[in-house]
Each structure stands twice: as C-alpha cells, then as structure tokens.
Image 1: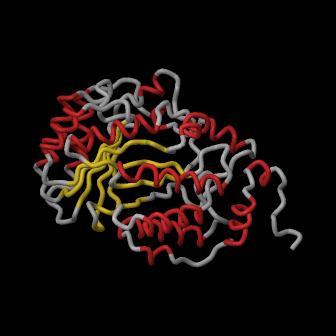
Image 2: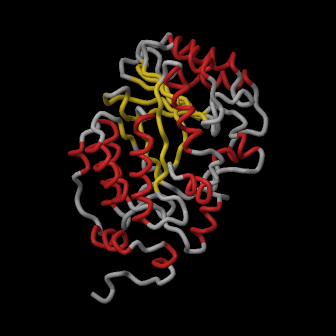
Image 3: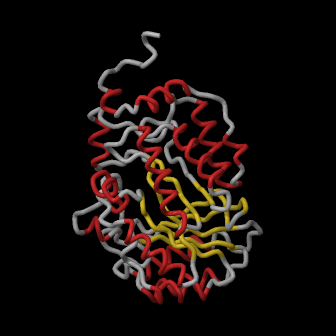
Length: 329
C-alpha cells in the first residue's frame, strides 16, 4: 500500500510518499506480545519475499519520479525496518540506493523498535543519502516506564530509547520520536501531562516529535475497553494544547501530528461534525508549516473538555454516568 499526502518535509511544507512494505510485521506480535492498541501486524501478510518487498517499493517510488514537488519518503513495515526477519540488509541497501537517485526527495524516514538497531546498519544507509534528511523513528510512546508497560505493553524502556537514539545520532542520522496521546487507564488530564513529561524527557535525544493520537483498532484491548464504555479516544483539544505548549517551549524542534480518524467515535474527537473536521485540518496545517497561528481555531464544546480535564475524570466515570457535566447547570 502507498499513497501521497502533505506534511512538513525537512523543515518546509511538502509532499510525502507513504509506503507500507508487505513484510511479516512486528516480532512482538509474532511472539504473542503486541502493543495493546496496535493491530497493524495483524494485517501483514503471513508469507512474503524480499523480491515482493522491493518490487512494491519500486512501484511506489515510480509515482513520484520526475515530479517537481519537494518530497519525503516515509517507509512503514508494521514492525521494524532494521529487523532482518522483515527486511533483509541487502533489501534495505537496494531501497536506499534507489532513494539516493531521487533529487526531488529531501527526506527519508524509516521506523524501528529501540532494541532492534545497530550503528553500522544505520551508518551505511545514512552515507547513501547523506544529502537528505534521514530520520529513524522510534516508538517511545511514553517516557514513563510504568505507563509504557501497563497501558501499552511496549516491551521496552526509556533507557532503551536513549541507547537507540545515541546509536542513531552517532551513525549520522536523526531521531523521530513517536509519543502516544492517551493510553488506556489515563484520564484526559493525565494523558496531556504524560505527553508533556515525555517531550521534556526525550527532547535531548529527539530531532522530530510525532504526537500520535489513539484510535480504536479492531481486535485490540483498546477496542474491548471502548466497546464496554470504559475508554474514550482523546479530545482534539488535548492535542491542540500539547502542540501549542511544545512548540512554544521547544521552538527549534519539529512537532508533527496526524489525527487519523478525527471526528469519528473510533478516532480522536471533540463533539463531532464539521467543527471537528476544521480542527483536524488546523492540526495538519500546523504540522506542515510549524506555524502556531493555524491552531487558533473556532471553539467547539471547549467548556466540556475543560471541565473533564480540570476534574481529572477517568473515562469510565464519565461514560458510565451517561450524563453531561453541564446537564444541571
């Protein structure tokens, strides 16, 4: 699967070629220990080949050859690009050899778990695209090890992330850090504070932050709790607050967010409708430009969000009551 979208490309607005390689997916899923919110590896093929993976990449890249736009290529595997069970070293090299030929590609991003990394693996790719912004994305999710364990089942720690980030930087590449807004068992207020805490703690090791908003994927623990009325996906106002705070505090860092499923019950939402879509567009525009003016958006049930945040209500306390906090006002 591949598609073209828009986002920030090496510091400026541009276009992104997103490529999902047909690998066998994350090893944690394969051994029966997946992250609680993630169903991506379940959609990975049971069998594949390195020839199929390379062929799929070349087919995707053909879509942008000769175009004048400023492009990023972001490669996903539903696992780790540096896991040789998914993508072998020679396949990685052949993929980067193709990328090195593309003058309209200014940025390339791959992702990996923090424990699957070696300096020589990263360096050989970094040297092939030394004229491009090369990032290795790591799913930290939370810098709080208890939250990463209990709410996510991440299987790695903040110290693992630090070690991986140092390896990546030493190899000549940059680090993109994925953070998850609102893991299960956190209130809206605690979720916001956890992301802020994680940004402050990870900032010395990070070039770009990606604030990922929880959405409900099929067959996950998150879906089970959501179906029982014990979990609500994050409010869009929460990511707006985080992005405003983060960009003001660390103006030289890049903060991205892709609010997948915004406005729907399974995705991040305020009260739904056209105003949610307007906030979704504002978040995407901020990501592309890094300009805070785009986060000045029309209010949409802001008072309800502020009440829930100030009270520190857990989702089951609010959702089980079936009563609006303003019903008696």
